[in-house]
Image: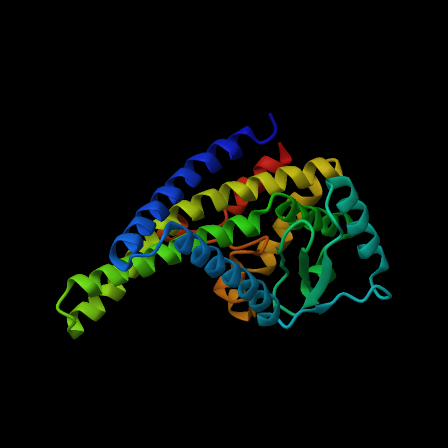
Length: 274
């Protein structure tokens, strides 16, 4: 079965997130007297708005513009061919000055967008660029961005409910206000740990899918090496922390690995070369 490991992990994380959400929903119905349908409607609206705003902000934050087809006809043709092979519609292609070689995808199968940096196009060979594009298309096909936003939405909802519980059960003084903020942050972080864990595994899956569609993992492995070297000067990067989570490269070390959205670059390269 294709991506059995991903499906198993998704089932586990999905069950955990549903449990958090169910507890939050029961609290809202009990405290505010909302019906289950009102809770569901509010949740869908909240996540939907978060998805739309997040997509718009990711593109706007790097100043991305449409990739000119007259200047980059080979990239447009290759993405069209890759999209056809992967069973998705050709996404919108955009380019931005990020200060470092990188790329990210947002959206879903029928409305995806892939953003590449000028630095990436100037440093990578054609087959390496193809590997990066295939990786981003795999994220769109596997609905990775949608799942990330869904997980973030659940984390935000649970955090908001936790804050209100603290405020409504306290003495309504300034100490309760600050305690509510702390409890909300801790609760959101706890839920996001599960989202980060599945996000790291989804990077391996996107690498594997890219290698399958382009006929081997070597081009993408070489691309990751060049991207890693190009990102050593992270102070030059114009990409903020929120967009970094979407990029093909976002490596953290030490204790921060627990909160990272990407696995170590060395392990990704090793897997691709195997």
